[in-house]
Image 1 (cartoon, rainbow, N blue to C red):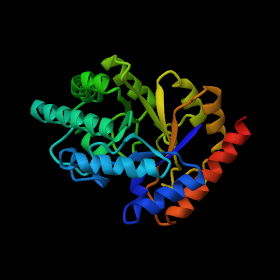
Image 2 (cartoon, rainbow, N blue to C red; image 1 turned 90 degrees about the vertical axis):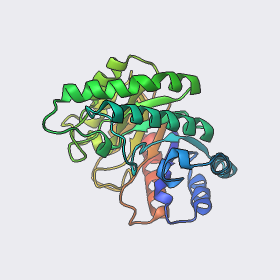
Image 3 (cartoon, rainbow, N blue to C red; image 1 turned 135 degrees about the vertical axis):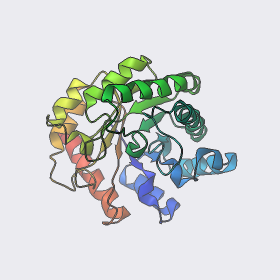
Length: 273
């Protein structure tokens, strides 16, 4: 199993020091939030892309891709009825595909709840159709760059679009491309009302990426969720993708989050053998 960490954890810290620490603790992948490199993808110059990729590589790690794709941007939305906004959003996602490729990554996790939630005047099916319209336009770029888009279900605390893995699968089926698949996240799955390990097993044929964390917004093993059944399920489905630590509460500090998360994941993986 390959372990990664999301780089927004390092904001306000020395990136080089954090990367070296992460590698020393057993992380070999880095997942990048675009806003950590520049306000928008078009504002991240080629030299910045190559410099960042080289820095990560020099620390013994690799960039696995992007997440928070539309966070901290303006003028983009996935489910809107406004065709022009959907067109702009598709164009921007194409820019992010190019950024992912330039960084050496191969996956883009589509969460960004603020840019996909729909109003009460719209049904979920209408929102689904609008989202599919946007994502179909991006598929040729994904295929050309050999980058896969991973649709992320999020709990109702985040928004109202794709709250369940089954809903995300419906969107994936509507797009019908092998370049658009499923992402699962422990924090999000904890709100589904179904055991997390069962959700993993039920979606084994679609899942290409995984976030390890806890509903308390910290890392795996830093909250109440028993991570052992989760890692057993990952083992049972022969999951060979990345397990990426994504946290939202940075207060314990970078080293504590990295260390305690890794210790938990390694214990759980050993127990699953």
